[in-house]
Structures are given as C-alpha cells and as structure tokens.
Length: 458
Ligand SMILES: *Cc1c(COP(=O)(O)O)cnc(C)c1O
Image (cartoon, rainbow, N blue to C red; front, side, top):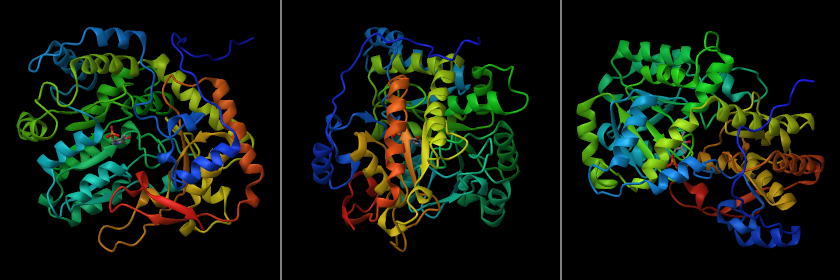
C-alpha cells in the first residue's frame, strides 16, 4: 500500500480549547452585535477568523527568542534578520515594521500622493485603506476568471495585462507611483500568481517605467503553487522560485504574521538605496529606529528563523494539504466552495449557499453567524461588510463575490479539527433553506468598518 500523507511536524506543547453549548453561543453572538470580531476567544471552539499572527512557532523559533539582542541600535538580531531577508528575497535593503499595514504606511508615505492611481490584483483591505486614506485610488486589474468560483484556473491571482496596460497607457506616468502585485492574492481567495504573469507585469512596467512592489504576505505559498502547477518549476526548490519571483519586483511589503510564522511583525525590503533613505524617515517617525522598527530583538530573531522554515517544501506541503483536505470534505458534501482551493483558506460561496438572502442583508455574514451558532467555529465574512462604502459617493459597494472564509492557522489545528469544521458547515448546508433572513447595519466606522460594525437581525 502507498503510505498516506501525514504532517511534517509533531506537537510539543498544547493549549486547551473550551467547548460551548448552542444556548451559550446564541447569547454571546447577540452580545457581540452579530460581529464575530467582538467575540472573546474563549467563546470560540475552533478559530478560523484569520491565519494572521495565529501560527504556532517551532522549537527553533522559541530558541531564537532566548538569543534576542535588545540593543537599541545595530543589534545582532537586526543583522540576523537583514541576512535572512537578503538570502531569501534578494533585496539588499530592509526596514522592520510592527506589522504589514505599518510597512504599507511607511512605504506609501514615501511614494503615494493625492490623486495617484495604484493598479494591482484585488488589493488587500489594509492596502486599499492606506491608498484611499491618501486620496489615491486602487485600480483592480485581476483576471475575470477570478470571480467565477466554479472555474478551475491554476492562477486566479493573475493580473490581466490588457487591463493593466490600459491604466498605464491612459494616465500620466507621474500619477502611477507603483504597481502592487499581491502574492498570493488574499482578496480573490488566496489564489496564486504565476511566474509568467509576474514576468509579464515586469516587462510592461519597464515599458512605462513604473516600479513594481509585491504585497508579499504569502509569497512562500505562492512559490509552492508555482512549483506544483507551473510548467518548468517542478524540479526547482522553493527558495529558488522565491528568488526568481522577487527578481521581478523593485521591493516588497511583508506581513510577517503570515508566511514568516510569527505572531507579530512586518518589514519593507527594496533594491533602491535612495528609496530606502526616503522611507527611513517615515520608519523612524511611525515605527522606531531603522534597526528595530517596532519589533524587539527576540522577535526579529524568531522572524528570521520563520522565514527559513516558511520556505521549506515539507512545511508548505503539510500546510497546503491541510487546507485542501478541508476543502475536499466540504466539496464531497456539496457545499459550494471556491475552486481551486486557496493556500491559506477555504472560501465558501455564500451567494450559492444562501441564494434566498438579498445582498443588502449581508449574505456571507449571515452564513458566518450560522456556522458559529451551529458549532463554535469562527470564520470571517469577505463580502459587503469588508467591501465597505465608496469613499466618494459613500454608497455601499456590493462585491461580485460574497464569501465565508475559513482561514487555517499555521501548524495549529489537527485533521480531526478539520473534520469537525466540515461536519459543522455541512449541517448548516443541510438546513440552509430554513435560513430566511440576514442582517442590517446598526452602527459602523467611516473606514475599515468590518472590524467594529454592529448588526441586528433584518
Ligand atoms: C495581512 C495582510 C496585510 C496586512 O498585514 P498586517 O500584518 O495584518 O498589518 C497586507 N496584505 C496582505 C495580502 C495581507 O494578507
């Protein structure tokens, strides 16, 4: 018999989980104003809200914590991280920041001004938030195939080159400070961008002399998909693929809470010394001196180790197989899930799950609440709440897709946990026709409203 697949690590330390009853959950979610961000973590049994900062560090990372150098300037931890970043990404200059959005804040302060246009592939919400906060505009150039959840396409994160060229051609070069390519593309479902697409974007950008930056939170998962799916990469190792990917960029922003498997941290890396100098000013202003930027020495050590571990094939294979395992279970039961499965999460197509709920009543949020009530599993809405209002007209933006995201933390849950989630959501699917009403917004913030929004039953 062929030996079955199994995880590439074992468990050394455990954390108890608290079970709850449906009656308790009904009370708690009401008190939370039907916003899952307002739940206390002990009110959640399996937490699939996000894979951001929720991963389990390895024994080697914890060992690095003890070796941290807390010197204000020039610490050995800073140089350890600088070397890891140069080795893995090829970028000679870097600035540490406290997380990914801080990297965006620093880089955009140095590069983006009012009225600018920033084309890319389905910009992440904080990226878009930082662009719009500067009264600039994010232009989505993702391929159309990304928006059909049933279509099998290996690289749904790709940029449509005609859409991109149209933006570059029709606008003054001074108005386009950068192109941002998100790898993998979180907002379109953790979908990868092919090496060919990265290369083609680079060529186009060179023609119009526009810098290219990667929003790199899940660069290693992207590299794994290139190895598995793209012709010519099967025999290359992950590190070689990562180096080639970044060779097509001028720089990157990183949320280390994702593929670098730490609980907090981020950075910016770039090739251009002059940009590094300009961005350093904002780093010192917002984050801290350039040799720590909001991170302690021990955290930079753990992050350096996380970059190496996060780019190991065996780790990535375990991670992406676990996500696909959950996806397959749901698919077998008939639950409409996005296909192919993303790297960090399974996306449930809520419009097809609950066709009776109108989009104004927040379809994906309705499904997220139902799953929580059923099982104590916390997923997250990627739909109308997240899409927020148009900054100019203040009208609600209704996105093409209403998704419930089940995000899998790295190295945290077991296969039994995935089975539990699959049965929970399948139970909701079996009684889906009994769900007649969604939610209305009672209270919302002017920007990034999904974190704090208050809802009531429609
Ligand atoms: C998480 C994430 C960010 C923001 O990073 P934070 O560490 O949460 O501030 C930016 N872009 C992408 C693609 C992300 O996934």
